[in-house]
Length: 313
Image (cartoon, rainbow, N blue to C red):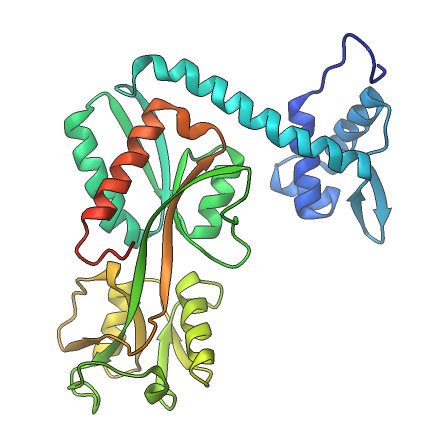
């Protein structure tokens, strides 16, 4: 088929394969991510190249890279994908968002603070709208959105995450979640009304894993204050982190959205100057926000976030 043929068409499944190869760098990695064989991926991409009569991949060491023609093709593929999502949304919008199913991926803390309260309201106002919630960290949530396994994600900005101007997503900023210092009640600084982060430079610290968004914010804030935190303990759950702080194992920065924390004997103290914070947002695939059930979920999340007493726009 030539490019000027009246029957010119493109298999969107093969375009998605091409996008994955661009993202992952090798056919083998693409095959593993999509649960296919490398041979199947190669055959599909070779078929697409034959259909279009243009080269799509070229070898670079052990990997591959996209040709100029392939990058031009993917620029249009993003627009086509967004338009298809809008077509899907137009069909679903007939029901005005009163029925349907929306799959949400969210951090545990944002499930408790935002998704749960939004679900409660929607179950009352739109009983025919079904929400399915999956706990996911920010990286896994965006990956699930890309794969079509999730319709909405509630995530935190993180290195390597989607930019605000990424055309593949529709984004709704919800709130800025400020981080405060968490100290054991008997700590010498526990009686203070505010602290400068540099006053904790000699402390032992507690944080999540190194690739966790809050840990990255903590490390960056400490670096700005002139030191690298001595992280001795790692935990993903804020109540577990609080239990370690209460036990005197170290200090930590904890987002206000994580409160209340269950262990007693803790002191939460704001920082002086500009406070480190995490940016909480909701996102869908581009065009999906016009889907009435999805739009209803996004609007309810926005309302819940705006009503929180600790919300910083």
